[in-house]
Image (cartoon, rainbow, N blue to C red; front, side):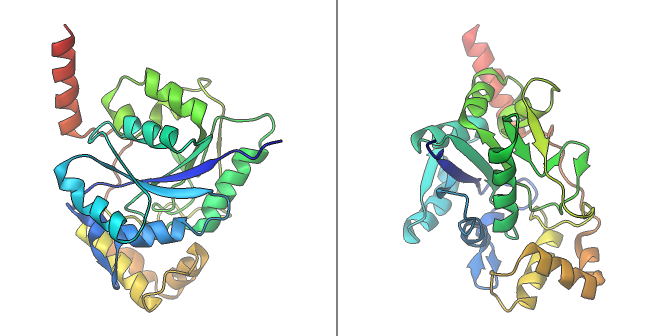
Length: 266
């Protein structure tokens, strides 16, 4: 049986509403996006990892970073991220797509590999595997990994018509029971209270402290970070007050753009 092409796609943009330019901010000598890419690229189950950013001028610095460091880069739609991911996957002949966000510099290659293995080994076969779903999470925020077949992604791209479904890529697949066959991968215990992603200044402070503890190296595992937090529980208080965005939150730029398209179609 032919081995499917498995492509990891890291979506990244400069225009974060809460922390603009976050993916190029420094983490002990390297930008956030470099940390995310390097860690994801260590996943053994991925045939290729690329960064998907937009064609918007504000995202030129991301494309320039990729060019300087010979990192594969796809540029697509600025606000319709589902469209961008679909075309990035299609152009790279992906049969299985692994979605990662560029603001997760603690993403763990072993977690990525586990999610992909669950997807590949599922019997009966499934369309989508993730390590978190709405209302269900056991991994820390910031290790989020979503795996789907290209066929499922193509169906979402064709059918999704809500702004948040286009912005957050995968909701069309997982939000309606029975629409697709899905599985959720759990950690060995509940660590959902830990926040290891980057969306605010508080998050940045925490992540910088983590990288300082590891002397700027990025070869540590998420289990190593758990051990660090057990030794220094005060670290988790650095961003304990930050709220996580809902998967149904919408970028107002996209909402306005969609209304304009509707008007033009009338």
